[in-house]
Amino acid sequence: MKKRAIYVAGAYSSGTTMGTLLNIRRAIQWGNEIMKAGHAPLVPHLDFQMIINLQGRYIPEVKDLQEIAMAWLEKADAVFVVPDSEDSTGTQKEILRAMELNIPVHNKLEALLTEMTIMELKDQPKAA
Image (cartoon, rainbow, N blue to C red; front, side, top):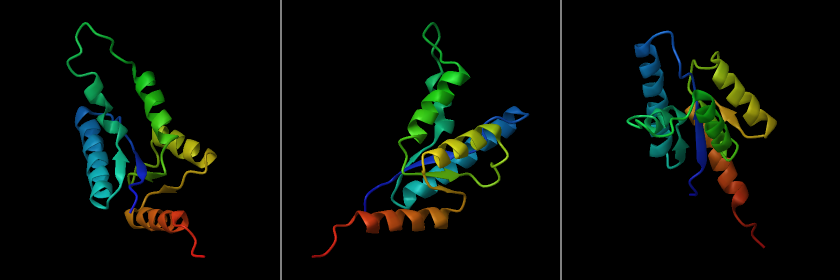
């Protein structure tokens, strides 16, 4: 089975630090489930690591990180939306961009995995 690139979209910011950390945790957990299923998740929620301990060096702005994440979304085979994140403004932008590019969007893991299986079958050479 070919590993498919799956972009994990979901709420990041919250009204509280704990809420933001929980959003990051949820995205990582879903990314882990996608990885266990044999695919390659991209979890943009992990981008915070790019600014940890960069004293005196270039520190990207939030806008820069969002643009980088969107560039990766545009290369994805599919987008997985973390359940209950659909109301997030950033998530809505990600869903809209994926739809513009005809990239499949799912918020149920089983539906995502079914779509990846269908892609796999379509990619197989036709029997003569």
